[in-house]
Amino acid sequence: MRLKIKVPASFGRFGNELEGLGIAVSLYNDFYFEKAKIWEFAGFPAVTKVPEELVKKAFEKTFWYAKKATSGYKVTLIQCIPMSRGLGFNATCLTAGVLAANYFLNKIYSPSNLLNIAAGLYGSSEHLAPIIFGGLCSDYQFEGEVKIVKYPIHEELVFTHLMPKFSVPAVQRKPVPSAALSMRDRMAKAINLPRAFQTGDLLMLREILAGQVGETGFFEHLKGEAELMQFLKDEPVPYFVNDGDFTITFISKGTIVPKLRSQGFWNRFEVITLTPESLGGTIEAVL
Image (cartoon, rainbow, N blue to C red; front, side, top):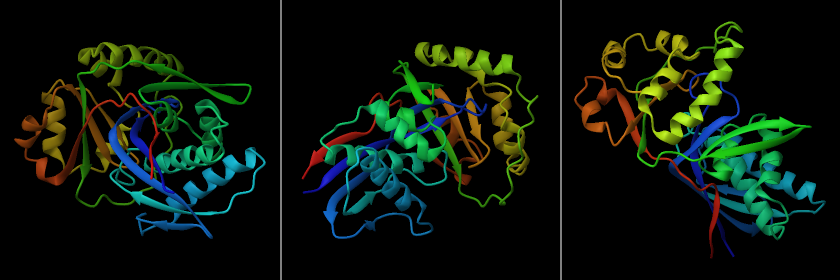
């Protein structure tokens, strides 16, 4: 028997260090689980064993909470979500692990239980919550437990995600000064951003996402991309950056790919067009 787990990609923090806020989008990794004598992995990135270990740890931790012993499994990944591109790849591995384990435990845990198990291994939940629950999720903690609120998203929104094809020099990410974004600003952005996503108000999204904490570091390391920077000044399109993975994501209603294709920077970036995903990770088929 093979168990198939389908999990979506996600965006988190939206360039403003807004911990606990993330959205699921329409790109997926498929994980296949089947019992084996020892743990085996196929289809995973060859550059690191971290994703494999995350699947295994999440699976075994779920069994540990249930006070059950587990044997080995063969896990095969059909990968569509790129690694280290700001799309929550590692969080998909943890989600697949807890979902598969819960299935083999006869589904004794709720999605909220599984989120807390995975978050305990990951250290944060802005990617995990939308991957497990779907949609736009905001989370908070009460007495050590992660709790989530799920918001509706305007169905016409499109995320155009740009990932550099060129090599970006490896740099140590600079700590964000505490004064870079005041508590008032953080609260205002965190409160109003879900409303902007719900209504699809592009002007409101642009205004809320202005002055992102990660922008300075992002543009420091993309100084050669003058055409991209000029495009951002000229076009009133909301966007957010990921200064750790050096990606930039535009938000629009309908596609802006034709407009981007006419720009000089088009060929220097890999571009993925995504839409909001209302469903989280699912057990899609048992073969």
